[in-house]
Amino acid sequence: MKQAWPPFVQAVQALPSVPDILSVMAEMTGLRFVCVAHVTETSWTTCAVLDQLGFGLAPGDELDVGTTLCRSVRAANATIVIDHVSGDDLFHNHPTPRQYGFESYVSIPIHGIDGEFFGTLCGLDPRPLPLSESKTLKSLTLFAQLISKQLEAERRYADRNSELSVEKENAMLREQFIAVLGHDIRTPLSSILHGAEILLQAGGDERTRTIARTMQRSGQRIARMIDDVLDFTRGRLGGGIGLDAAAVADLDDALRQVVAECQHEHPDQRIEAVIDVPGTVWCNRDRVAQVLANLLANALRYGRKDAPVRVDARLAGGTFTLTVANEGDTIDPAKLGKLFQPYWRDDDGQPRRGLGLGLYIASEIARAHHGLLEVVSAHGQTAFTFSIPAGLR
Image (cartoon, rainbow, N blue to C red; front, side, top):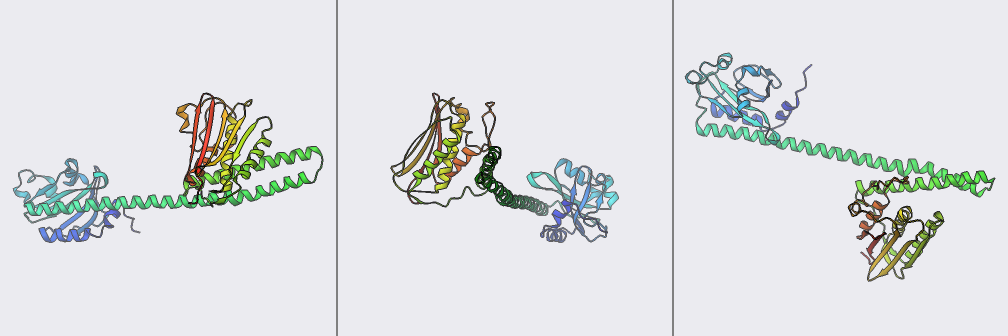
């Protein structure tokens, strides 16, 4: 069974111009053995050959590199050309011409990607031939350069195809990941939440109700985490968070609902809200509410427990702005730019909840609305401001 060619032989065999180059080289010079060889410090391998002398070399066949002049070409990275070995001062007693029986010889470097030495374009013949003539040698050098350029181009093309293949595989894995989160995990989670709701509605003893409430809160927290990871996956690895925007006339109601829910979850902390959105805002209602929920969760988490968290939502001058401010430690200016990075957390030694995606997702929602999410922290006050154009886009 024939062995598969090594990659460097396959690379030369894949170049459709090489047989034509060898044929023209033989016809132009009279050389009856011409080839492209891959040459390293320890090996000489035929990659393509036109053999009219019956040497019997085929692609993939090897010679002892120590018996070839191509080794010297590689060492010096320079052409060797001999018109007539017997009359050549340097090579008339050299063992290589005697071993292979040639009088005329040429070997020109071929380079691969980034200029690394690949091998040689070489030829030989038992007859003396005028290979060193300027026009002949220039043409042969151009042939070697052409092969070099084609090898480099094919390698870069293969690398690009490999990158595209990896990207395609990553896209498939991303879609599978989204499908698993969106269905395979969310479906049983919905059953758990539904079961907890049934237990709460059924009454029962206090222990059962306590367990049901714990199940419900844990399930809702997991559901929020799933939503966050899905948003991250679509936003970071896909084309950004998608929006189904519309003219929303009751955005203030949605924001007040978020404030009420957060206040219920944090009865020991105070939220003061001023919400003044008298007109219509072109946005995704649920996404803007999600921004407020994420900003409130952050403020309640890091703010002083004895100071209120302040919410200010306004529609003025064609811009909707939503600010959430809290009192607490001033954020180091060096850390402000990292707040909107996914999974980034300040190493403050406090226990962690969630995945660290809330601010990142809020910033992506702002970007999807052609808006901004900004943060200012000074003198013990930190404020996040979400602003978007309110008009139809």
